[in-house]
Image (cartoon, rainbow, N blue to C red; front, side, top):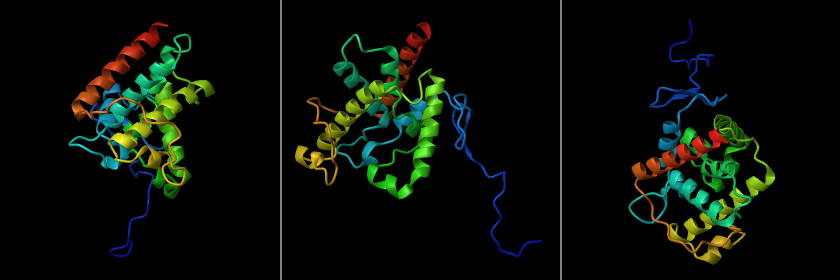
Length: 212
């Protein structure tokens, strides 16, 4: 018998999964593409704020809306002969791990959390790619196009929603944005709209990919 008040030893029964509204259980340590439904992903992304929620306006700019905006930018920048359904789908789900883990860790915090965070995010993103028939890792050209669009949206968010000047956003000593802000207006949506729009686009693209 252990001492009164002594902490319990860790056991193999410690919970390492999260239950979603769909009833699925996501194994956080070893995720499977069968551990979540499309609805779980869409809801998670639509309830996570970019920039830790430190943005202008009454509504947060969600990761779901960001993913849709990155997709729109990839479409705008990519020549038609280079734009494939899988590139579009990969752009849409490029931050999917955040929706399943329930967090968008801001860049300054990542070094403090160490390599375990990257391993966790990579494992989750790999499961997402397996679910939707995408390669992991992505081919370099595909990854480059998505990253450029992602950085352009980040710079736009920094200026329009966070309140930085373009010079502050581009300053390598602080934010170091490598893409200039886009000439478009960002208007944050309610979470319900972001969830519905993301889910509709996910279903549309996955349906088209299955037919190819």
